[in-house]
Length: 286
Image (cartoon, rainbow, N blue to C red; front, side, top):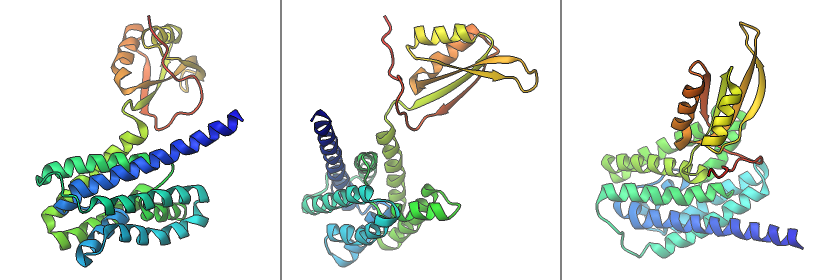
């Protein structure tokens, strides 16, 4: 019974965030970007252009243009993703129609670009984080990625360059350039929404004073450390390799710890995009 209740709450939570993301994405567009003739990329961007040319409702285009991609993606990607995307697209299409009669919040094109991009990015980021999508071109990109040498990001970027260029012909090149700025703001905010503000980092440390460094990391940062065995390729000497996951804000402190203990230590620090399992939570330091 407890398992069923947990599963039910998990599904409820997922669709709550998909719904919230759809509302935010619609608000970012209708309150900031669209009144100032700034467009987004992907199917939404195409829908904005078509809505402007035909005077038809944006929500109709966003829904109708995405449906063929969802049908295509049903067999290629999976039922769960398509159902989540259909729910998000339907919610988004409804809310852009509700918000459309409401006047935009600012006529300052720079403010509209920045705030519209941020709100749209948070909305789309929530939708992607919880397993959905607002853009059928992403489905095509995922499928093409399996069959070509191009990444999903490169394929989506190609689509969006074409769409944003089309905006220049319809709205003028200054609006197309503002659209490009909004697109990059949205892109960055999507990353932050999906990965969080902490931006986790993985540190690999090779040192002859590994035990001392590990103790200091545990005591001063409250982070766990994993010991790996290694051997120098040139010297053939056995070495201790430390692995630890920290936040971006802790990088400077980690470097300070390593310099204090072993100025000759070899260190690499790289981005971590996702973490599952393990005891990663920071211990309290008294």
